[in-house]
Length: 107
Image (cartoon, rainbow, N blue to C red; front, top):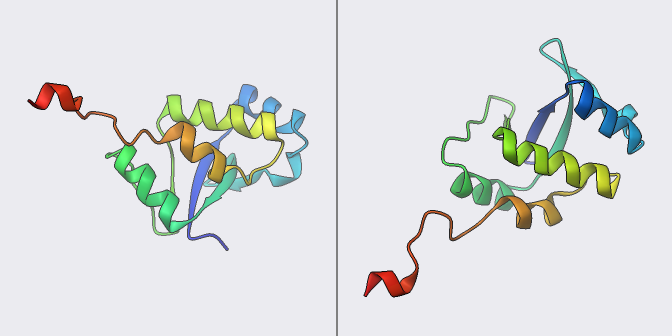
């Protein structure tokens, strides 16, 4: 079991991409909605929290990404045809320099 989860709630478009990737058997029901869950480690979770300061985790250590990040993650899942994508996806989702001024501006 993973340390943390990302819940991706599926609309028709996202569900189509997940099914086209051969992952229809990974669709679960959460609070009456269809979703897939992407596992991530504690280290990856810390990076996401730094990148998305308003990210909230529920009692089961699951979160929902902002829409733009979720769309990127769904695209990565569709391309790689697996839910085990966080080692790769974290590089696309987490920008360690986001919101920081360039060093030249600090002089």
